[in-house]
Length: 304
Ligand code: PEP
Ligand code: MG
Image 1: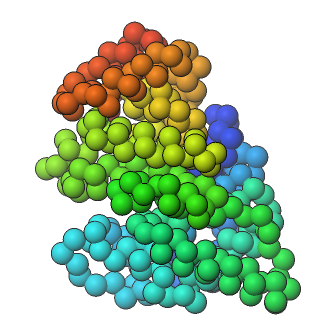
Image 2: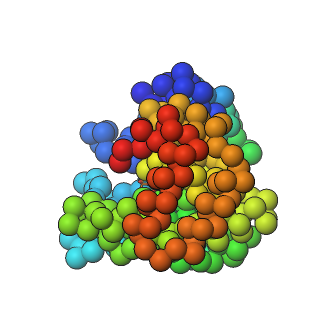
């Protein structure tokens, strides 16, 4: 299991626990107790008992039979994630109760996917507050200090990051989705896979805006998604001030080796150059070349 293998490679925690897999692999709707057992198991297996639990991210390509899915022309732009779960407040609160209760067993954060507007975030905050109040009233013990965060994976959220930061404790960038939405290219469609490559200058311009806003407000920001595992991307991200990355345990040793060997000034210069470039190929070739110069050992592993 990823949480246990993360301990062996020196991870500091589990940066993204995708809770929908608990639902997709369960034959019926998992109860609050079922979920609590799962979350607690992950927390106890994780480095430093530290886990960011993301609420259900269903819809798009992932469906369960009990949430009334519909055929949609554009499922990734449709009824997914919080857009779906918010329409089932009781069901959603069951998950939040389980997460908050699991919060007693480690350093747990709750993370909401696919946020687009401040109104959504305010509604989610009210839902969390009501869930906390309900637990208190029922005298059910829970983690009082569970931080509240949102994923930045819709361009609207990234571009108004300053407004969202006023509402949350932390953010996590979902680079897989953010890239597909910036590029308007389905991440699962091989015909447009070339557009989902993380080298368009616009991606770095948007990321720079998010990272800078978080630094200015001293709010924690983590980068999730496949981009985090590519040294060429890591170089530009480090240069923009990104310091927290969530990736599959298999990539952690390489990423650590790279981060240790990279000169921060060279990374900053690379980031500045990338946002001024015009062509995808120019960005990719430049970053790949710089990784080769700065850390030849790691460059041979960046084959994606
Ligand atoms: C992402 O979008 O980058 C992300 C981490 O979430 P998922 O891949 O599960 O959509
Ligand atoms: Mg996502």
